[in-house]
Image (cartoon, rainbow, N blue to C red; front, top):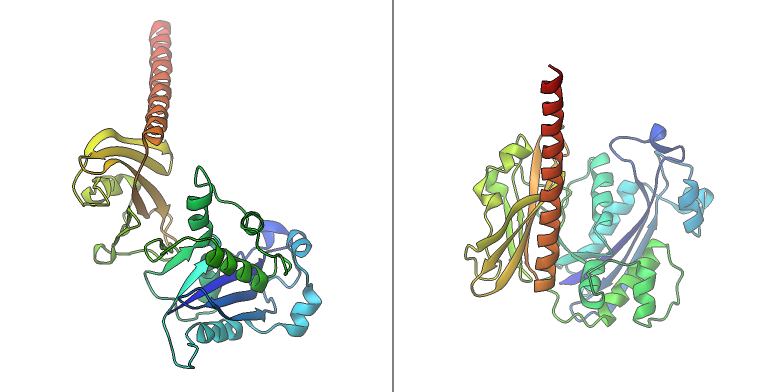
Length: 336
């Protein structure tokens, strides 16, 4: 099996949303990748420039980052469909010329989203579902930052004292640097640290994704007609320990963090406190339907206190709104 470290460069409408195509707001103009084997040894890289069709003029901010311009894209670029077909064929090529398994690695989750958006636009066959990948940005953050905060690729390269022998903001070079971070970051066995791409989601209960890995539970639900309907589902609202599968004792009941996210905390007798979060995502082909991404992870005592304070703040604001509403009613009744 090989790791395919992918990076993309994309363009957008130079005149903003007014010129944006609703099916493809970001048009890929470069596919870059580095192929490394199971021992993190570099095999080869891949680069294709792509001649843009929707947005032939580069957005000014995109142009500032790149080392090439529209003329070079027209001169050296190929169609997206040709570039992507060649890329996917290259991904599956083993060192002996035979086909081999591979898994994508990226610096953040956006590249796979934009790749699939462009593939859908050109009616290409979809990538496998569910699609697992390694988010090297997140794996790096979990090891090297105190609060798991993500950082730019350049900062990680500098922190690990890697040689900066290539320019950044070219897809093939950024893929190379991401591969070097993976190789030199001393992350150990990352087989359990995969993420699940959310570009496509389950439609029915039979397709629900439940993954216990890296001391976490990832649960990606089927579609529901509304957020209210989703919150009635026991599979979504139950909280279990991701390590032993037992139901936990709820210490902090579900409460809204914002309009799209809710938290709860439970305690496993064997493995301690667990933070459960649910995020409500709009189904891409519907204006009302939603699906849910639930994650359950172990948390420290410090993190438990932070969540408890957040819950108290939410409750205080709710109580304040209720008191103001009652006062307004009393004022109206007094006038009557």
